[in-house]
Image (cartoon, rainbow over all chains, first blue to last red; front, side, top):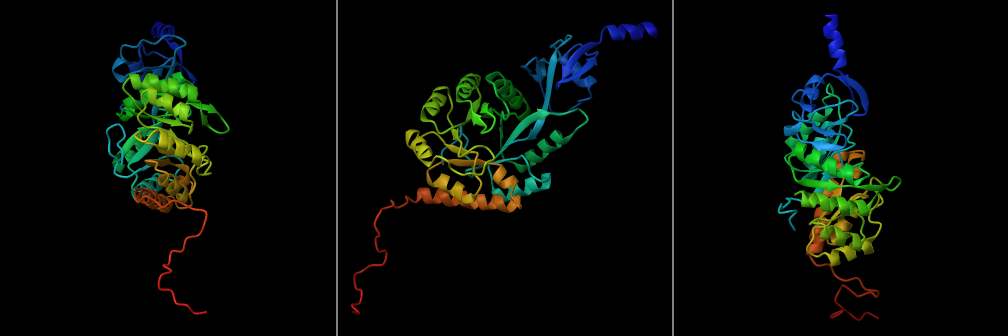
Length: 77
Length: 257
C-alpha cells in the first residue's frame, strides 16, 4: 500500500490547468481530461500556448511544468 | 445582398450573445431580431460547471450561422490559437478576428490583425476582421485573404454610433465588392439605419440589445431599422441640396393677392 502510494506520488506531475496549479497522474492530454472529469463535455485544448486537436490529445504527453488551457463555448459579442 | 464567403444571409443582422439578463431573454431577442448570425466565444470552464455546454445547446437551437470570435486576444499568437480552438468546437471556418491593441478604446491592433489574418487565411479560415475604417489597413487585410471587412462604428460597447461617417463612406467606395459589416459601437437603431443607408452590407452588435431594458423589443427595433436602411439604400436616395425646392407643384396655383 505504502509503496504503491509512494510510486503514485513519484509519478505525479505538477502542471497548470487554466492557470491553476494541480498534480495529476495522467500521461497525456486525453487522460488528463478524463482525470479531471470533463467526460463528454465539448472543450478545446491547448498545451503551452499551442492548440492540440481532439484527435491528437492521446498522443500528446504531459510533463512537469506544462500549461494547459481547457476552453468551452461561451457567450460572445 | 453580397455573400459572405459563399454564404447568403437571410438578413443582414449579426447579433452577439453576451451580457443578456438570462438565457431565455437571449433566445427571445434572437427570435425577434431575425438575426442570421450569432457571435460566440470561448472561455475557461471547470469540469463541474455546465454553463458553457448549456449555452452551446441553446445557440444550436437558434438555427443561425455561428461566428466565433477571438475577443480578448492581444497578440497574434493568442488570436491564432484561439481561432484553431474555436474552429474545432464550433465546426466552422468562420472567425471574427479581434486583436486588441489598446485597453481604453479596445481599438484593434491593426498590425497584429493583418498578420493574424494572413496566417489564418492561409490555413483555410474565412476571416471576418474587426478593424478600423482605415483604408490602407483594409487594403492589407484584403491582400491577406479577407473577403469581408468589419470596420467599427465606435469603440466596443460605447453606443456612440458612427464616429467617422466619411471614413465608412470612403471604405464603401473603395471596396464596392467586399461585404462590409459595421461591427461595434452602435447604441440606437437609427445608427444602424444610417450605416445601412451608407451602403454597408450588414450590422453586428451586441451591447445595444443585451443592455437595453427590454432586449427582445430592442432586437426587433434594430431589425426594423436595418431593414429600413437597407431598403432606403436600394431605393437610390435623392441628393441633399443647399437651397429649398418646393415639393408642391407651383403650376396652377391660384393668385389670391
